[in-house]
Structures are given as C-alpha cells and as structure tokens.
Length: 337
Image (cartoon, rainbow, N blue to C red; front, side):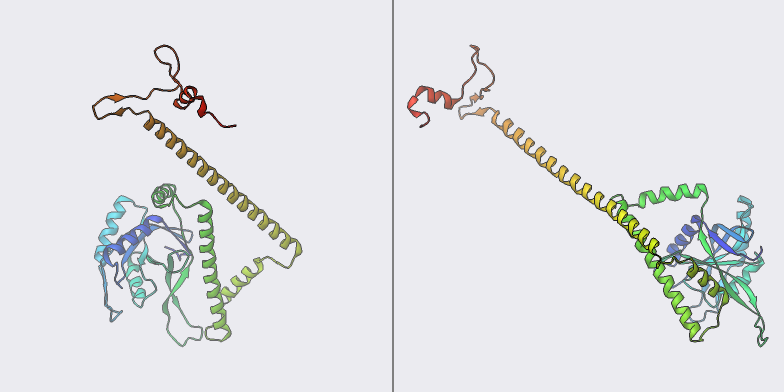
C-alpha cells in the first residue's frame, strides 16, 4: 500500500468501534483495539470494515502490551473469503490520544500492510468536529545527523464517507433518533451554534500555535504558515462599503422572514385556541340539553317525560310555555309600563 494521503472512514466502522468499546471497556480507563479493513487507491484509504482484536496492556508500564497477531491472521483470511477486495489497511484505537506503545503496534502490523494506518476514534468526544484522527508512521532523519532515524506519526486528513446503501441505512437509523417535536428553525440554530463553537476551538488552537512559534518554543512549520496565509487571503474585506451593505440587506431579509413566520405562527395558535373554546362551549350546551330532556322518575315509580316545546300534542296544537300560560290566565301579572 502506498503512503496514504487521506482516509475515509465509513459509518459501519464507527458503529463497530463504539459497540466494541461499550462491550469491553465502558466506564473504565482502558482502550480497545481492532483491525481496519478496506482498500487504497491513489493515496486515499477507504476504511469500510473492521473487527475487534484481543488486546491487553499494563497500566503502570505502557511498554508492556499483548496483541494476538495469530488471531489477526486467521480473521483476515476468513474476511478475505467473504470479500477479497477488503484487505488490512491498519488498526484503530479508542485513544483518546496517541500512546507510547502505538509505534510498536504499528510496527507489528506492518507484516499485514506495507504502511499500516492508525485511526483514533473518540467514543466520547468532548470537542466539536469529527471523532476520528488518522496517522501513519514514517522514518524521520534529523538534518544535522545527530540522531539515528526513528519512527514518528504523521497526521493525515480524515473524513466520513458512505456508499449509497450505507446512506440509506444511516437515514433509517437517524429517523428513529430524530426528535419530531423540535422545529426546523431550532435545529438550524443549534447546528449553527455547534459550528461556531467548533470554529472558535480551531481559532484558539491557531492562536496557541502562533504564540508558541513567536516565543520560539517550537520550530516554524512553513507548510502550516502557508495554509494560514491562504485562509487569511480568502477572508472577505469588510471595509468595502458595497459588501457591508450587501451583508446588511441579506441580514434584514432573513430577519423579516423570521418575524413574519413568528407572526403567522402566533395567529394560527390564537385561532386554534378560539376554535377549541367554541367547541368546548358547544359540547357543554349539548350536554345541558340532553340532561334537560331526560325523564323524571317519581317516588311511586311513575315516569314523567317533559314535552318538547316544538312538538305538537295529540290535537295538533303546540305546547306553550308555562310562563306565557300563567300570564294569559292572570292579566294582572303582566309587565309594568
């Protein structure tokens, strides 16, 4: 396998690593180790599968560790029978950082891959961003020749990628996890907040690095300086009046849409409240009418039904109201002028 330039970790690998950690080392300070399977093409390593490996290390002496490489050999042969395209491309660790024995483990796994990749997966990430970090080991020789060449880890970019089948599976998995009660606006604001916190963390790292370089605690890395210069060159010049005006117009338009949406939402909520109250009053009136039409049962067991005012009697005459009948019988009880 040539020297890797970047690594693409698939969702199945992340799920397998988290499951391995929860089964073996959850609520402990231990880490778990496994083998990564995939294929490499044009410097890009596609990590598509993985399997766990029995691993033990001494907490007091990090140089003492055990990894069953015969188990790795037998598992690799069985996976090759299932999918011949998947080969051993490296190993993973739950870290959450590099340890002293990692170079030795990488050297051991070099019998299965020419340049084994180390991917550290943070199962409990504390910072925003991708939970994976990829490294490969290379020989470093000092320019002054004062020391012998030694292995060092080199960090390479990582990303999370998926095939079409994996995307469908992840969508079905997230469909059950997603909270349907949260509105789209709230979700978008939460994502923006997460992105801004991640950007703040990266800017603080850049500031700390530049401060160390100015204090001459670490040597200058010209590649990093060139990349920072490219970032600064891409920043917009906010001193231009037209750009500032364009930003202000765009912001006002977005705030107008948010204001109108909130206003419509309030009107709809008030409308639903009034409809609910009207329905409740109608139900109460219907219940009162039903109670008034119920037959009365006397002590002797006779049932007396209340005649309906709108229904005619046996002679075809409609029933009159009792108050009207009493007024007709006694005219003196009429209304006073």
